[in-house]
Image 1: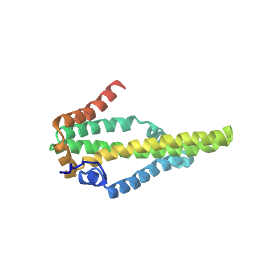
Image 2: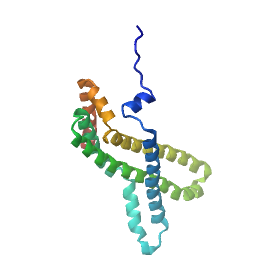
Image 3: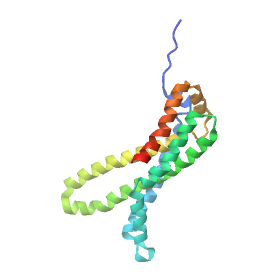
Image 4: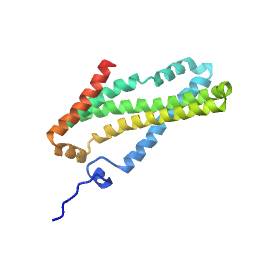
Length: 199
């Protein structure tokens, strides 16, 4: 009698609510749109006429670069996710986690745009002061950092999408051994809470 092999492939991911090509593509477009807002904010702060109060736009730009608000919004979201993993049938935890994670995601997407805009605005001056080689090197570092930020932010959206209400993912959670679910849930509850307290 042949033994059935359990493997994680695309069909398994779709069946258990881990993957949806359409949702992923739509969210990638949304992240680009939100990043464009941050990019335009930087350009407006740099070149807006005095009547548009560029100093206020510059303050908003500076606040957009700081990850503190992103972290503060994401912390209760991850805790809500952890509680949902521990108690998959308690949708109240999922709902609170989704709200906080989506706020964090939107802030993060705008922050990615601000980061990109800051580099583009500074690039001509860097080119003039340090030459093409140095500017290209900094550009590569900035591109890597920007990609990492965008990926981390996309993960935040993905976690919110997992618990958004797809019964397939909830069924997969309830099928897990209790010890596995407790370990995974406590990780998402304790990791952001401890990081926030001890940072």
